[in-house]
Structure formats: structure tokens, C-alpha cells
Length: 368
Image (tube, rainbow, N blue to C red; front, side, top):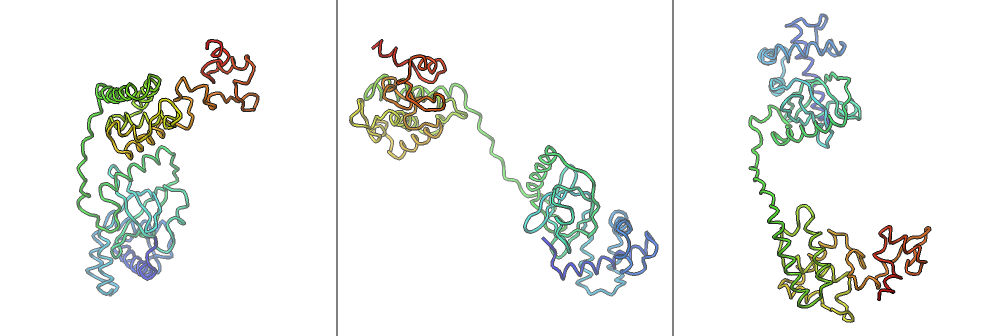
């Protein structure tokens, strides 16, 4: 993020020569007769001469090159001549990157420049807290960009809202020209890729139809191979999946979604256990819906992640299996987790009133 030492030394040789020439022509600051005098004067005096050149009399750069009062070789004259492509103004020192420091021009259409430091890293000069607003001159230097060694800072701090806005300006600047690393900057902005118009959001009718397609498939398998309990719980799961935004049921095959839902509910209720009734293997579910086992497994995994379903999940347990699901009855009482079915009735009633259990076990036994 620094100019090479030889190039930095050359800059600090050429700059005073040019500034001394300008001061002799304009008499901005008395007492500067030779380049060494320029370096010894206070910062403000040097800034005054610099501003007189770049802001008011930039044609003096060409005059210096044509007259060549210091007898410079052509390659060094070419460097000074390239300074006619300077950029003057206020800049936000926005971000330090590995290759350069980003200067963001202040204005309606900001441009991001990648700038190298001279003898010292810019971060050490302006402090660790960016952004910082400065006034300076950016100059080309052998295909790179440097600043002219004279920074005038503003004692301004920026809140989070302004920093967010500056980040948006930086993103817009990158889209227009990228980060400019040589001067003059490109004449034309970076061609923008055409933005594909977003498709219109699905209508309520489309969402309802997608849900009904899946429910129709679920109802059919439950009628043929499962039972009404499975139909109810699977329909509830399909409706909950459909309420996600955007509805996942609008993408992919209805058959795959139906298989994934039945797989997910079946997994909670041990549908794949041969000792259970009804019983179906996961691959049997996929075969029923005419999809591959990998497609059915993928949709089931997506649904479990989407709804945060876990083993023995009470939310998706069949009513007839609630008594056999220990997760449904484990309740914390006075800091201890216990099976509420073993607790006195008053604790069962309290748990039921708080919605921790689906019913009072003792009442279920009496009704049976």
C-alpha cells in the first residue's frame, strides 16, 4: 500500500522542483527560491502553492515541461507531464485494502480510487478510525495513483447511519468504474449486465393450488396405505410448510413434497417399524409417488430443517401414539425434569393449563 522507495524519492525530488517553479511565476509565498526552501516551509504555505497550481493555474504543469528549467531527463519530465491528469477535491478515506487505500470522492456520483501512500501508510497518518474526510490532490505515478503528500483533514466524526450511506455510495461507485487505480480514469463506465426483470410474485390462487395438489396426494396415500390420523397430521404439516414465505410448495414436484411430508411424519411416529401398524418403508412411500428415493430423502430432510422437526417431536405425534411418546410428558417441576404422568393430579392440571401437555392423563384413563 506504499509507493516503491525509489519512486517515492523521485516524487519528492520532482514535486519541489515544480512547486518552486510555480511560486516563482505566481509569487504565492515569499522566500521560496529553490526546491529545498519549499520543503522547509510550513504545511499551509506549501498547500497554498499547491492549490494555486492545481486549482487555479494547472497550465503551469505544461509550461514547466516545455521549459524544463531543471534540465530533467525525458522519463522524469513525462512523470511531471502526467500530473496534468490530477484529481483535486474532498475525499473520504474509506477503507484500507492490501494493495491500496480506497479514497471515495465526495459528490453526487462518487468515484472510488485505489491510492498508494508515499513514505508512511495512510492509515498511520489519519488514524485507525475510518472514514476520514480529507482534502488533497491525487496524481498518476507510473500507472498507479498517489496523493501529493499534502493532506488537509476535517474534524468531523460520522455516525452509523452516515457510514451505511457511504458504504452504499462505495458499492455504486464500484458498479460504475470499479476501483480506479490509474489516471486518467476510464472515459466510460463499466458496462452493466442487463438486469433480468423479477417474475411477478405468485398469486394466492397459485399458492392455494400448490397446497391442494400436495394435500390431494397425501389424502390418497393415507386412504390407500395409512389411516385418517396420518392424513390429518400430514395435512397440517403441508399447510405449515405452505405458510413459509415464499411458499416452498411452489417449486419442485408436488409428488416429491408429498413424499417428503409423509416421510417426515412417519419418521416421528415410527412408520418404518415393522412392528407398527400401519407400516411403510421410506422407499415404499417414494415408489407410491413415483419418485426416486434420493428425491424423497432430500425433501424429507428439507422439511425437517424447515420446521425444526426432531425425533419424537410432540408437535407431529399421532394422537394414538401420544401416550407412548415420553417427550410429550417430560416437564420441569421445581428444577427437576419428571414424567408428569407420575405426578399428583394438581401438578397435571397445572401443566395442562399452561399448555405443557395435551390432556390430563388420569382423565384419559377414566374415559377409556
